[in-house]
Image (tube, rainbow, N blue to C red; front, side):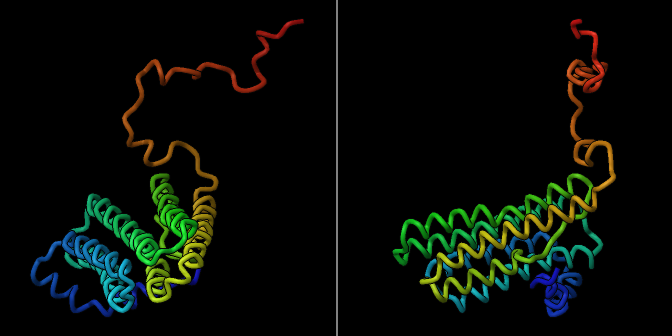
Length: 233
């Protein structure tokens, strides 16, 4: 589906000089994860103050950090499962900081309580697409990214809100609706990818097994409609 996420590889190519420098100097991909979080934290402050040009630069840096950690890991050949965990944590913290910046902007500008509540709902809704994607990955499907309303669109919406705080409520509704639609699109794609598969999800196979007595519960019970032993004549 077309979204601003399609610009990711264009942006990564622009960052090529930083990737090559990171490889030469042996810079850890985790450094760029941290850079993205710090940029998001500073961007949060810029959003609260309504300094939208600075917010634009800092949120671009936030997205740059999110691009660089994976790109540097691949270029250096140091990708690892825990790096995926750190990347996801960094992304989620950054997302929360950006949405919190809009809540702070609403409070600073004296927006109505209804607008503040809408932005808090938008903050929660913004997490829905990622919850679906991570659940899909745990089940053995692809970890989906992109739109129609992903983190790139949220960053753009945040900058617009900082520039035009009188429209914060509208921006909140856009984030809510866009996030719900994106979550539904990802869920539908995941359902299609997993259709026809049986057996436990990938994450379940790695979970500690239950006690044996728990595992045996229901194993020998006949399935629905077949138990006639208790029927009365």
